[in-house]
Image 1 (cartoon, rainbow, N blue to C red):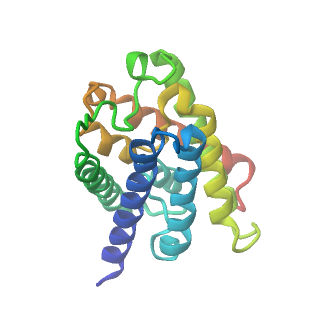
Image 2: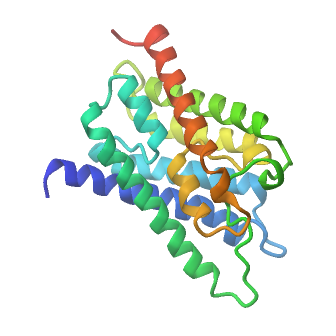
Length: 231
């Protein structure tokens, strides 16, 4: 297997794991009678998928698992622009397969209804009823901070071996803050997979969860370049 194929495979698997593990915690475990993990548990689950994926697959592809992060890595001069399309395609496919496997498992329960299926949204599709502007701003800010943390934690001058912990905890914190607002995306691939199976019109709002995270990622990378870059 050549170098690019290995990178794409790692990104596919990592994004599969993030979508299946993170969204799976919401669909299968969050509301389980008497034992539900709640939104705090879901936030931790998303953080753990990134943390574990980063250590297992990061040495192969960089462990992005997120089109917005890959865009940020290009702007931050960590990923060649020519490699970006392959990363994004692998990530989106991984998220779709992850959501598909989750759907097969979840639909095996009598009376199953997909409902929101851990999808993202605004207005009626926002867990807290937040409007489009609130969700747009939240997603831009959260993704910007996420990319800034990733670039800083993986810099040569950062403490060696701890990048995965910082990135995983950052994503956990992001979810703790923004689940009520948008059900937390900061990741266009993660939003795309569940939206294909949801029954709430999430596909109609999917555009925002591509635009806002990518805008936020670019802003976060530009801030890093201006203030923290080793150059």
